[in-house]
Amino acid sequence: MDTEFILKIVPMITALLAVVISPLISIYVTKKQLRASVNSKSRQEWINTLRDEITNYLFGFIKLEGMWFDNAQAIIGNNMAEKPHSSKDLTKALDELQKHKIKISLLINPNEDDHKKLIEILEEAYQNIRTKDKNRSEIEAEILTQSQLILKREWERVKSLD
Image 1: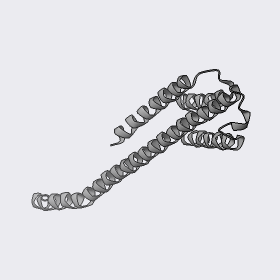
Image 2: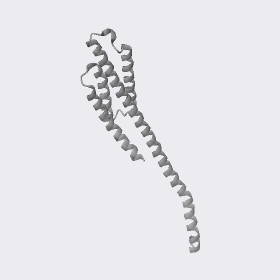
Image 3: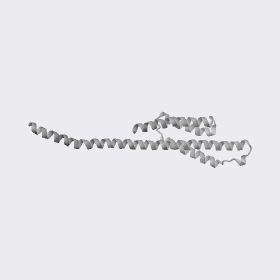
């Protein structure tokens, strides 16, 4: 082949490749960044929703414990007629608590051990309202500790996506 021909064709081929490959690389990088951004945003929203549901569960648990205590105090004082909370109120509070537990169950991954443990603790808390096997602050601390472990790990995953 003629050297002059090679000197003319090589820059043209290089320019053609640059025109074709550069946009492909740009598309690939943009797509990857967009996917990471969407995943990060979705995971952050999930974390916020889970945090809200755990907060609602804990608040409902504490409220329900207080309602049971108020009624127990009325019974102890032989004041049955003036129980501060009706069975309808208690049922409504129990239903709310159960609703939050179900939503938490739907939000978490049942294949991860720490997630399963959280559900076990929430169920134990729910059962404890009647049995009083543990005191409220013990259960509350278990829920908070387990929740913090999960939320911390998930937050680390969000940060790694950025």
